[in-house]
Amino acid sequence: MSDGRRTNTAERLLQATIRQLSESAPEAITTLGLAEDVGISQSAVYRHFPSLDALLGQAVDQIGQRFVAFTRAAQAELRSVDPRDPVETERHFQRILDHALAEPTLMQTYLRHRRSLGRVGESLRNIDRATVAEIDDHLRRTLAPPGGLPPELGEACSHAAWQILYALHGTLEFHIFGPGGAREASARALTHQVLAIVAARISPP
Image 1: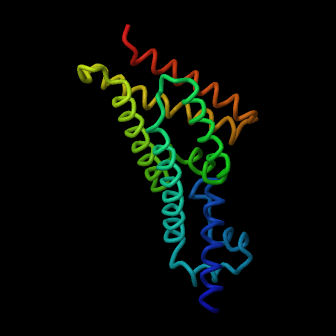
Image 2: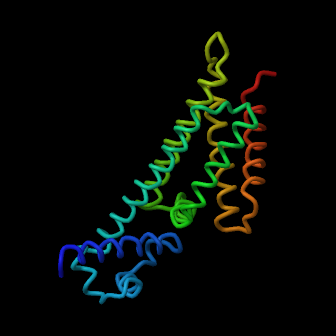
């Protein structure tokens, strides 16, 4: 087999693994199922990957790289958004939803496995932690009073950051696994949730 065909088959196996991860648990994935998906013999899988674990590992790495790229782009945009401004915030979430829903397989995998045990879940939870740290930092920089950030406000920002991430999860699940609907309406509803979180947890009495 030529190097080009070998690389193409390996990539097809990787994409089949990612697709199957978006639909089921890692334990349900087999070399036989992947071979049938790609249209090769089961033994041919081992010409490209030494084991199923190695194939799953590369698939998880690729999912992680793609999701890190997605979250970094969202985080870069976030730095220009004032979380108290409903217009800016709604536009930001509209763009996030547009980008996320353009990658349905990636989002399905993320939402399905972010709480699961094992390498897939841990990799995705690490991305969640990095995302929350970025939101937390943005809230602290944006909302800090002139005299500096008191400890109680710092703690409130941390709690608010997690709540904002959970609100985003809920909106994505509604579109990926639920009935979906107009993205503009979802972005507006998410904006109301975020403004309420910021007002309840961080705004001075």
